[in-house]
Image (cartoon, rainbow, N blue to C red; front, side):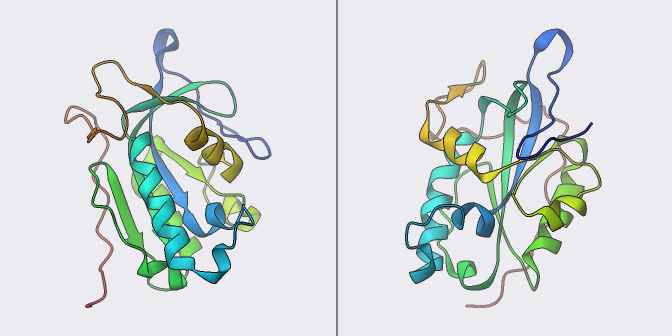
Amino acid sequence: MTSGPGGASASGGALGSPRDVVLVVDAANVVGSRPDGWWRDRAGAATRLLGRLPALVGATLTAPDGAGVRVLRVDVVLEGKARDATDPGAPGLVVHLAPHDGDAEVVVRARAAGAHALVVTADRGLRARLDGAPVAGPGWLLGVLDGPLRPSSGARTPGAGTATPPDRDVPPPPATPRPPP
């Protein structure tokens, strides 16, 4: 599988059914892609992003390459001051606090998701470290969040507590230790 500049490579399953994915989100890269004053309050900007991402769990989306993907889980990596963001505790949204380097944590999360990974970043250096995992740019993710979402068949409306269906073969993410408060 290859990815083009700014796009994702995600082929649909048999007979055009959507491919199940785990979105691995480089939050710093996504937040930094819009000049909306995020630099004045990095934790607040990350909290706002975290508040929007649960709507994707269970949704069927069109990847940048035009293929259908169904979001099973969203793994978000926070680094630096953004680590102070408030985790909404939504089903299917897993927040990982990078102990040091956010890019290294994104690589760990992408590898843990295996063939289901769809990484969201525009960082070229990070893309080169992803061992060929499909990648979408922040503009794609923000466009999806700004537009209408389609729930997967059998799923509830995105954002209404949609959880990852238990019959999926996606392993749970390894835990990232949280520092004591």
